Length: 119
Image (tube, rainbow, N blue to C red; front, side, top):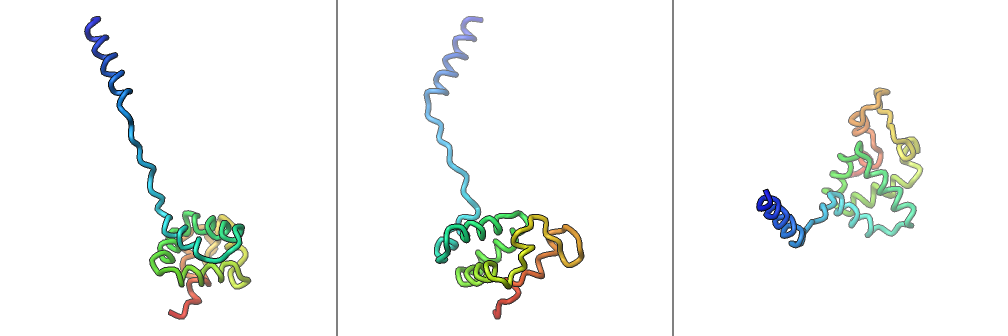
């Protein structure tokens, strides 16, 4: 019994003595943040845009804007901050789509910032 206890304690001591290396999880939105930093905006507007795009229901928008590049993101940001973007979509967490339901997917086709693109 004493040998088992001693060997267990030695094993624990050796495990604790070796350094544990942890890697911070990579931020999946890092490209978006880097692109937002390049847009000349006041900090409060940049925060507003970032918080809006971080909402789970805007994952499709995030992916689209990042994949389309800096020019698309800038255009969307300026449309979002202008009067052309519905205020209810800026301020509300529970978006109501065209069909009057709370399904975020119902809002994917009526975003004026994305649909106003000439491309």
